[in-house]
Length: 181
Image (cartoon, rainbow, N blue to C red; front, top):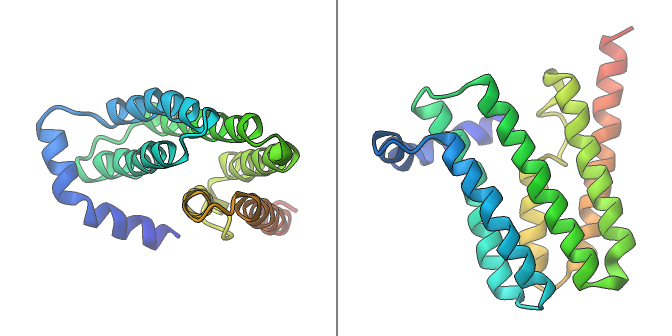
């Protein structure tokens, strides 16, 4: 997963170089993703799925872009890393909460996916060495959500996210247990 992240940063190098020269910092990009998720979720709640999907795809892109600008322009800071993770939790929480409102029948599964997603990130926050262990990382969860919305198979998307997150949590705990004896 780290290798994929490096490739994305390399792919976004021209954009990140332009943005950094224009004075746009990673934290500005992160803030924009937080701001945009609220109207996106409102659109989801009022059943404007395609508009939601377009803005959510932009928010997901911004999540990759802020890291690319930080890495490529050598603007990475401890606060920026915290703020990015903080924003990720806001985005995920808002999306899963909005799913529960918009699709009442999916509310229990949406909250399960939210809890498992948060726990996946929580384990990595405690021990950075397992951040790229498992296949239920944030990027993977975002892709599954985007695809499941695009193909209108949200139930299966939430189920896949829950399973991938649970697997990743267990795998990370296994590695941590071996290391922390």
